[in-house]
Amino acid sequence: MEKISRIIRIFVVFGIVALFSLQVFAQDKPTVSILGDSYSTFEGYTTPLENEQWYFKTKRDRTDVEKVEQTWWWILCDEYGLQLDINNSYSGSTISYSGYYGRDYKDRSFITRAPNIGNPDIILVFGATNDDWAGAPQGTLKYEDWTEEDLYSFRPAMTYLASYLCKNHPKAKIYFIVNDCLKDEITSTIREVCNHYGISVIELKNIAKKSSHPTVAGMRQIAEQVGTALKPKE
Image 1 (spheres, rainbow, N blue to C red):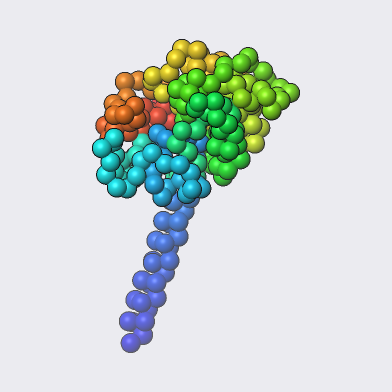
Image 2: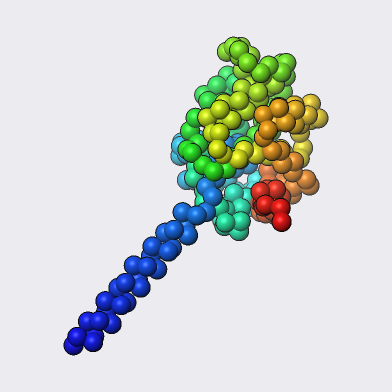
């Protein structure tokens, strides 16, 4: 009887050690937060949940992406050893306050949502596509003393966003993911601003799309290109 009790105690100890090891392993994964637009949405997986979505659980003709496991960020975390912290993505959102047809997008802009991304090790900003498509005013680069009016133009909005993220997340590694179909004036601004603040730029190449949005194949391409950029050089 005593021998059986001893064996049970040994199994309990091993079980506790194994559970602790799993917890430590999980905690060792770098955490990542996403500040994005429609490309990074999926119904039920954004913070807040009320953010406008583009990818849904129910099958839609405009895309073949119908499972969260098919999204670029899920694949990235799953295959590159990352832990998702917060995905604050909002379909149709712009970096600046200027939206489609001259509408005010202050409520959904990247600037407004930037305070709600947690405290991750890695920040992935995937935006500017809608600033391009909506024809947002470009404005001029400005690195301090921004006014409310400034933030309705793309260039000063970009500098404000970059400044905010660097100031409030000094220990995080920040990357800006650039879509492969943007106008040169948008892409060149992103490069210049990110270079100024020491933010890494990941420029996507030849992403497969349907309805101007990544397909299942395109999502994997994004995950692989971003994962390659994040992977430490040997």
